[in-house]
Length: 461
Image 1 (cartoon, rainbow, N blue to C red):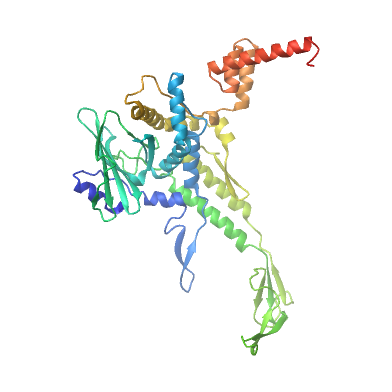
Image 2: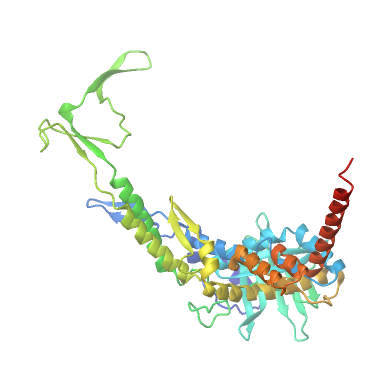
């Protein structure tokens, strides 16, 4: 069905905007790229299937950026307590942080994503990645008409189309098709709805699409780091081969081996054949039998080979390639390190020394800030039939770019010299807003006075 959606949209009268095929990006994200991770090689006699190992850096990059942008410490603030309670309850009921984080990861992996608000009893959200997004009309590099495709139920597909009208409103079409492309009708779903408010918000990594420079669509965070990802996986594969091929082996002349004679019986218990087998396990890789009864150059029938491993050389090459990859995806030169067979994200180094990372982080949050503000307003419109009359503030978690211990020391210093008040100190060290800090200080003072009263009275009976 996905391969025929362009046909259906054309039949409906829409002019499709060409977009790149995300299959290649998806294969990198999944860690299995045809002709690279799975390939054919000639061994001197025939072509054989080969596989390269992968550290899954495309997945790692998308996952790390998603955790930087959307995580449980991100805060959405909407003014008064009543509205704040409403948005908190709404987002919690939608498990928003989990789903939004997953969408951001797929957006950085495939290049594009979308939040779409709709009402089914209560306001709800749908999350689409690049594979389900079909841009229909663009104005000033912004997609203003778009279609989203999803599987509605077995063999039934739902096509959700949003069209901006001349009066600024949106026509939303809800269409259904079977897997043959024939139109279906669902009486409980309105086919066309007019909305005063925009219900979809596209997101993408905030960088120029140099694959298709005129396209309004985005590219994955690793689109310009394919060579580095290949180098990482080549280094990782070579490292593992070095360990595998460099293990100690013991070569034994067949004449020096001991064999055990066994009799193989049929189901009726009669002897079928008599065979000789070597006494060591045929599945082991240490011993290797060689035909003949001549001695080795050492004068014996056994020769031990223990190659000098070059593990450190391969690990240095892998570390260098990880450094180049981290730089290419905006995480910084020292973002990733390899030890104990695993890639680690060096958040301490990223946080304390890489100001370029912080600037990149801020740049990447901008499209998501715009989208989240829009989605909050869309949810409010679906709930109450009106837009919010207060400002929506998105506070992204910035703990990754702050050295918490250093920040606390700095706050204490400013407090000790009289620059910070007690309230400001609490706000800085406990990550509270002013209202929370005042309440916290009041409670601490009450507890302190209570303790003083207890001490004066000689304790509690």
